Image (tube, rainbow, N blue to C red):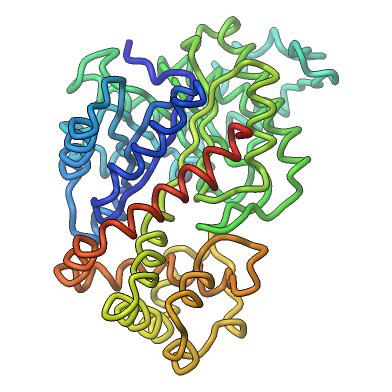
Length: 416
Ligand SMILES: [Zn+2]
């Protein structure tokens, strides 16, 4: 079976120019003795907005790894696919994030639910999971609640998995199941029963992406109590340990944190907990590559800065349209957005500092950052011009991409 390795980082590259800079950041970690498997992910929605095809991600990943002489594993992730979108990702992907969000809450067949409840009978009463100090009280009602909510989704995961397995062959790809894009978090005990369902449905899940509590807004810091996150995250890790022996889930299973990028306040917790338990992790951080491109263009000044200012101006005009698809994962206070006129007078440094995710910089503005984050469509609408600028100012942009992944993400995660 293909294995992801202990540590893996999912990176996104919407416009397909930054794979080398991202890989360089991962290579830099080798100097600290930390091996990380790179995974390039791009969702169907991003492909549709930019006008790219999943094959393009494969071409970029192959080229970057070849050019930098990367000899270890790397993967191309069909990010958040479901029954409607899986097909076109199959040839070029070897990592599949099976997204069951759309199927959660839909009820499975009554007799399937009954059959699952029967299998769970042995867990009724007090359940101890090694490493977790408190006991879980398991009742039939609790399990029925989980089955009503998640069994249909587990069955759909199996259906999608079988389509992929039928085309690619067993063991030739990584299987992730994601359920992060839903309003309510899954508790550790819900995760336990969901993994039982996936095992029963014969989905060899290697990474699982739950919805954690707190808000994971796009491209800005975690909103919530990091210590509460840490408690939940640690219990989830211990649940995974237990299900490997209990349900025969693949031994390498690990948590996948769909970070929405830049969850800096929880990174040290993730780092210390995986260290404490000697566990691996997959962290997916995607969209901020586009923001680093915009920051790099701002710093390049002249025509590049003018392009960025024009994007911001159009984003203000189209704010509702741009924000609508991301309503659940952004929080923009529009009263704190500077006017077009004000921004047009800004220097290169001021523009870059306003966008860059350094929270103690007085110029940093998370509202403007989030608006530009969801505004990548505006660059896609003038793709030739944008691609030309990316090529012309490659040096300054790639240093921003590198610094973002290496300094702000990996060093925080691994306490360097
Ligand atoms: Zn996700």
